[in-house]
Image (tube, rainbow, N blue to C red):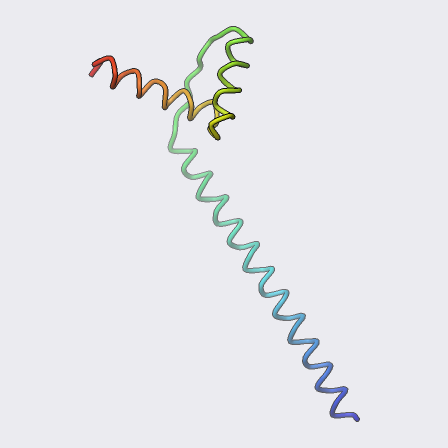
Length: 88
């Protein structure tokens, strides 16, 4: 019976250790992804665009409806305009 209890205790310890290890790996991967995103963001620049509040609401709604941030929507719209109006 002592052997059974010992095996049970070892199985529980191994299970707990594996769970802790998996959680540590998940946290480390999350931290790495956050650092990569932050580094990408640092390589970018910011521009200000003035508009009426109702324009911002309209543009934000359109962007969100298409799964885009407002910034991504503006970049996409500007690039499309440049390409379709021969501005290059």
